[in-house]
Amino acid sequence: MYIIKVGGGSTINLEGVASDLATLEQPFLVVLGANALRDDLGLRLGQEKVQLTSVSGYSSVFSDADAIDLIMMAYSGLGNRRFVELCQRDGVNAIGLTGLDGRLVQGRRNRGIKVRENGKTMIKRDFSGKPAKVNAPLLTTLLDQGYRPVLSIPIIDEAGFAINSENDDIVAVLQGALKADKVIQLIEAPGFLEDKNDEGSMLQTLPVSEIKAREASVEGRMKRKMLALGRLFDAGAREVIISDGRTAHPVLDALAGKGTTIR
Image (cartoon, rainbow, N blue to C red; front, side, top):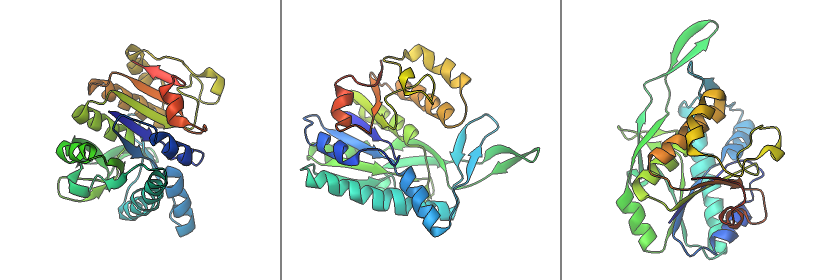
């Protein structure tokens, strides 16, 4: 089976992704992003996104109760529903889910994020956390019955609260539970770039042995993404393909070897 992570950028070709999914013989599930939609809805509602950077250099979105409401509107609401609609129009029997449904993705709420503000170290507490386990029997039942899950945040914490989490981390716990043959990540770039501002700097391959060193040399969102890549291989991934989600055939291009392959 495949785990296909679809980025939430505004230029991702969701129609192309859905039509490609209709050609796959392998079972799959989709982890769907919607960050551009969240930001657009937040702008319309006058709700500004707040970005935090921990003292260790990892960036995340501050997720208070209003931010969780916005996530539900954008990710599990409009974004998920519209993508499921695209899949159904192409003959893919998609079923939209969040980590809340059937405790599909159980997480641990963060006890606090240590940040530096105005020269002081502070602890910020919110509704965010890391995924810890997956309701694998529910997913395998759906897959065996021919359904194709489309999973969006939020996930659920120990006390039953909805919490924000990183899709990269969710993919890692899914891989640990389901042992996918391939993990495909569709992003707004041709693949993994040496220089984020130069699409010509894409690497055809990236050795797993380099991931830790690269994590130490970058900052912000990329630092978190490199950490999640390492966790993905720790969870038993054999092949990860980072490929362009903006092309006419994003999934088929990735399977044809376009993008960056990590084995």
